[in-house]
Amino acid sequence: MPKPNREGCPAECRGCSHRELDEAESLAQKQAWLADRLAPWASVLRRIVAPAGPERWGYRDKVSLKARWDPQEGWRFGMEVRDRLVGLENCPVQSIRVRSALAWLSKALPPAGVFPLSIYSQVGAQATLILKTQNDPGDGWLAGKEAELALTGLEGLWVHLFPCAGRHLFGAGPMRLLWGKPLSRNPMGLFYGPQGFQQVILSLYARSLDEAEAFLSPGPGTSVIDLYCGAGATLARWSARGARTLGIELSKAALDCARLNAPEADLLRGRCALRIPQAEAWIQQVPEAFRLVYANPPRTGLEPEITEWLATRCRPARIAYLSCSAGTLARDLERLTAEGFSVVSILPYDFFPQTRHVESVVRLERKHDCLNPVWQGFKGCW
Image 1 (cartoon, rainbow, N blue to C red):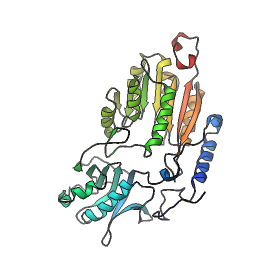
Image 2 (image 1 turned 90 degrees about the horizontal axis):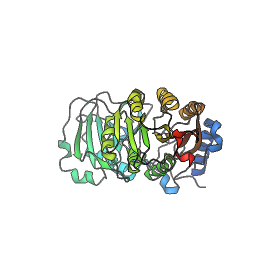
Image 3 (image 1 turned 135 degrees about the vertical axis):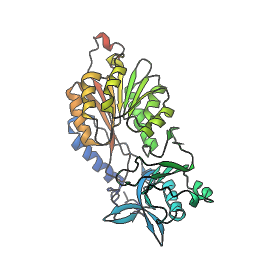
Image 4 (image 1 turned 180 degrees about the vertical axis):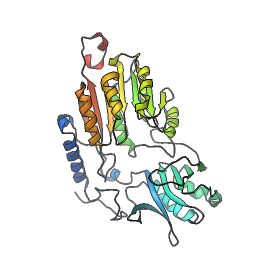
């Protein structure tokens, strides 16, 4: 298999550790990594589902890039390596929309002396200019340029004043819509804003949700707790099937979108671990055989309190767990299987081609007694 075309990819870039590998080599490394980390469940680990050929390039429609002013070239965007900016304006992994927006901003923005831009963030059609200042420089610079901006594919452009911008992109400072509309819809029809998170290869993400939905089999009479529910993509699915749903999420911006995307769902804001009392009260009226859980935690995995609660008190019949870290996944599976859950399957997805990252949908089922009346009607007893 020929090596991929990496034109526009700087050698110093640290973003794509697999860019020197072809598709087969990259997938083989990821499969081996999962097999090593998830060795106790090797018998149920499937082959990675991956996009093919051209779909592996130009897919990244979500970026956070450092910004620096250059008197000759205008604004540059990329990553810092040893105090030097490595430009990523033409990165072949980034979408056409991202590259178009960067090209326009490079020439259209005022110079650094009057516009202290620190970070550029883009989520799909929503972009944010993050300024290290408390003083809003205004929007006079945009006058007469709106038509050009619209041609980039952006639908909303924001200014966020955050003097401490760095590791954290968004803080308590003002956030103002500079141009366009505050929310966009992705190809799945879901609302998202400038602080949203969504998988960047939506067709592959949809396949992972199909897998989770088929396994959970939500419907009338079932109740689904959606942990780390984000903007409600999964809540909308469970609700559409007639299930009673509860979503828990820390981000206010994500929950604001979840209310639009899944209006039938009950929602709680905060760390999942701190919302256990409310979740327990919500689920108690439902027999264990009809309790379902979907979890999509950050890289740190399930909070220890959540793992303990699922294993010993919530005790759902089935769990679908989308993991972005094989290490924390192995830790969580060890605890859940010790408490009576069995791992039905682990299906990996190559959501981030050219990188070392791989995510997995894990399907867990609690061992049940079909002779016990509480399990009457349960899917596994049909």
